[in-house]
Image (cartoon, rainbow, N blue to C red; front, side):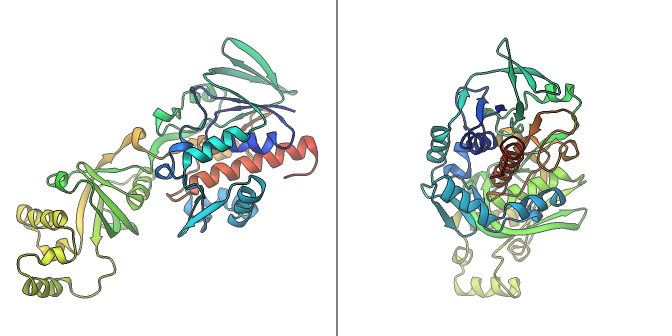
Length: 388
C-alpha cells in the first residue's frame, strides 16, 4: 500500500514511523525546508512527550478522547516508545521526556529512523479521492496513492511551519471546521504598570479564573510575570479555558503562597514587627516585594488583600505566534473513531488539525501519538491483517 502523509510534524512523523516499519510504502510531504521543526521546540526544548496522568478530562472533548485513551493508556504508550522505538524515557514528576531531555535529539532520531521518503519544500495544492485511491496534486505534478493522511497541524507557532495553509483546500472539500484560535498562550493584562520591573520573576500561586465575579476554574502552578502580562503553564491552561468560552469580563486572580494558611493580615503584622524594613522580602524576592508595595500605594489596595489575591483583567492573548496549540479545527463529527474521513474514501486526519486540544504537560503530543497509532492500526488491519 502506498500512503501519502501531508505534514511532517509530530503526528505525521509518528504515523510515518508506525507504517513504514510495518512495510508500508510511505511518502511524507512537508512544505517547509525541514521536518519536525515544531516538535523539536516543544517542552522548552526538552520534548514533554507523555504525561503519567493521561486522562480524557485533560482534553476539550473527553467523550471523543476517552475510548482512545482506553485503547492507548500511558503504560502502552510508554512501552511502545521505549521497547518498540528504542527511546528510553525520563520522568520529572508527572511529565515524561526522552532520556536525552532534548527535543532536537528526539526529532532527529525520528527523522533518521524512518524507512520512508520525506519530500521537503513540497507544496500540496489539492487532491481528488475516488473508490480506488487518491490523486494528489503537488508541485505542478499529479501522483497516485492508495491513501492520503492530512497531518498538517493547526495555526500555532507559524514560524515552525504550522500555519493552516491547507485549511482552504479542506473547506473546499466540504469539511466543517470549528474556528481556529490560539491556545496555551501567555495572557495580556490591563494592569501593566510596574510589570516591567518584575518581568522574568516566577512565583508559586493558585490562579482563579473569574467572569462577572463567578469562579470558572482554578489551578495551582508557577506564574511567570512579563512586562505585558502573565505566562507559565497554569496561565497557558487558563488562556485555553478563556478561548473556548464566551466570557464577558475575564479576571485572573493570582493567589501567592497557596500553602500559607491563616489570617494573612495578622501574619503581615507579625512580619512587619519582626523586620520593619524588609518584612516582605522574607517571603518574596526583592523586586516582587517592591512591586506589591508600589501597587498598594498606587491603587489603594491594601497589602493584606494583595498578598491574598492579586487581580489582573484579561486584555488578550499572545496570538498564534506565541501559542502552543490550536483550539478548533476539523470537527470530530467529520471522522470515524479511527480517524478516517466520513466524506471521502481513502482520506484521513490526525493530530492538531482536528478540534482536539489538551492542557499543558505532554497531553497534546500524547494525542498526536495516539491518533497516529489508531490510524496506523486501522490501515494495517485493513491491508495487512493483524493490527499493531
